[in-house]
Length: 259
Image (cartoon, rainbow, N blue to C red; front, side, top):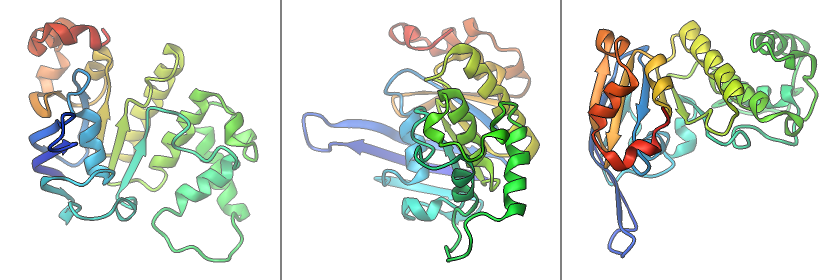
């Protein structure tokens, strides 16, 4: 499904600020894998997602998704394959546009634009039904500006937008980190339901070890731009936070990973 082979990425090469973010990273995902990713600050988690999305070019290595070589494709050409939700709820939506307008933009990702009516009644009813699945009452506020929504409502909408076209790969970059615990739990629950319903192959970065254990069928731990632990199946089901701390084995980073 996804194959990352020999990825390298260094920032500010040749300067005093040189930082090797990804160092010979290899990763293969099977169709339908829901992989949680943990690691300390600077481990390379978000950089890996940015390389997949095309935000940064790779220095070395290849990225293949369902047999398509994404390595040298620009970011906008990868959009039709990927869905993404960011840590900041403000990043995934257009604040000055209505809820239904944001959904229409997401629904047209990768398509040619024309001069037809923006949203027809049939499409509007589809959006209403999809919003209702979130359980947040947004189906009754479809013309409301997205900038008026709470962070949790906005992130739930962003999640819906990212999965509207059933992407080949869903990237979740600490998408609940900016939310209060109750709202974060709601968004995580919605995430699990949507991923399972649509059988989406997913990479979810998190600092919360309990969430990393609870969600998904596979867990990887990164350090210094490499994968140092890869756990799946029964072993993952039986994991505890203490187990992860022992596997991580880096005392200075334990405070960076929420228990």
